[in-house]
Length: 329
Ligand SMILES: NC(=O)c1ccc[n+]([C@@H]2O[C@H](COP(=O)([O-])OP(=O)(O)OC[C@H]3O[C@@H](n4cnc5c(N)ncnc54)[C@H](OP(=O)(O)O)[C@@H]3O)[C@@H](O)[C@H]2O)c1
Image (tube, rainbow, N blue to C red; front, side, top):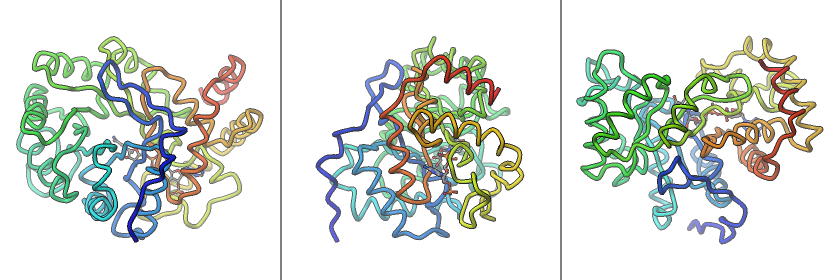
């Protein structure tokens, strides 16, 4: 069946500017870290991508190593893109990243020119795309000079393989240091991707300030703390949940147990706002001006449907914010 995107796709979504760049992103982006591997059903992946795009999500976040197996999320996205999304390429912001382990030997990870350029070429090949809209350094490399990483990323733009550059997981000092190099090179570096949610306040300790000073944007990953900040675990550990999946080592049943009392209290605040906890958690991230978009993950369409409602209620009272701080800080 031919996919025709919904004509109503731009009716509701909010688009937010990335720093002082010309680029705007949908307030919600869809991430392909989980649920898009070769262990996951392709038909479900297609449904998730269709639903997201049909509701105004324009930004799709991928990386070389997403799967499992590593690389399979790019391959799967490429298949679906090829079948369904080619007519919509100019309505989409598609990203990838290099930096985490991808292939054996000394060149398969980190931030050398050798790794970054080869990795970008591999990602283009797997997805079948001509270019990425944003290409990221996925993590800072403590052994490679930032000049080398920045010049490699700059070359990726100059050779037409990406339009914009981003960085991810750099601390405030590292961000300031590499920004100075990008500024000198006039590289279109516009965005930093970091974890931020009610349980993880790290970017509030300097990173958001650096980005605001440098007029760059933020895009948040794991805004739902991988599902903790939803109603997923309110009544136990569902069999098909991320905390229970053996191929997902970054969220455990112990993490759920440790947070459950806080989750229940936050759930009550969300209810009093007329939101689900997932909706409130995304609204809470989006209250930060520097945050252009939050990258959600989803294992099923109903989660995207729920999460999209976050933009209906973005404002918080001082009392609500203080209550959230008391519970989570
Ligand atoms: N730059 C980096 O280093 C980095 C690191 C991590 C992630 N990322 C990016 O950020 C994206 C999002 O990360 P994430 O998947 O951890 O995000 P997340 O949105 O915090 O968690 C997504 C998970 O939460 C659950 N969920 C989502 N919406 C729900 C709802 N409405 N109700 C109940 N449960 C809900 C689902 O879990 P179940 O599977 O249990 O249903 C879903 O898979 C990734 O795909 C990736 O693109 C980047």
